[in-house]
Length: 238
Image (cartoon, rainbow, N blue to C red; front, side):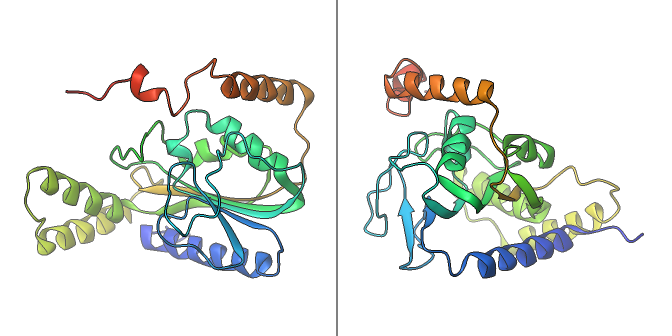
């Protein structure tokens, strides 16, 4: 059987994301968690706890969504969960507000440099994202960006810290070399990020639900580390 290269994984992700877009196009209540300067469209509700720009509709906390159970048709959450101190609670909240049969699309990093906006807490492998999202029925999951993107971002970050511009020819050569190398791998081990597309038709068991509700209460009462207290608990390195 022919092995998949990193560009093949990206193409597969793009195909799946297009399918997700077609399925959810006619949904009434669509939430985009973290717009990053680009809202999907006027029919989407863009939420972000820290972003105060005009494209954000609500500064809601993904770990404490002010929505009733089963009121949302679909959710897209890209490049957000790494900035959340309790991602399991965030996923629980998204599961709670989704309607039965609702769709969710999540993308998270695996190999990316630390990028606090304003904080950065964790990373996931292909297997890790499936564990995190296990309360949803999996439709598709896999690599969303390969080693080339990781190398390009790493090179640009390294040169930026040296106050220099990364030579385009160096980045291109590195990307080509990585593509040739990864084509020989039987299993991808170096990649930039992963995705998960799931559907809500599973019920969270009572034990886990009780634990998540307890964590949510402690979070709301500031009995655990919260984004607004993280700087005090973990002051920036000198």
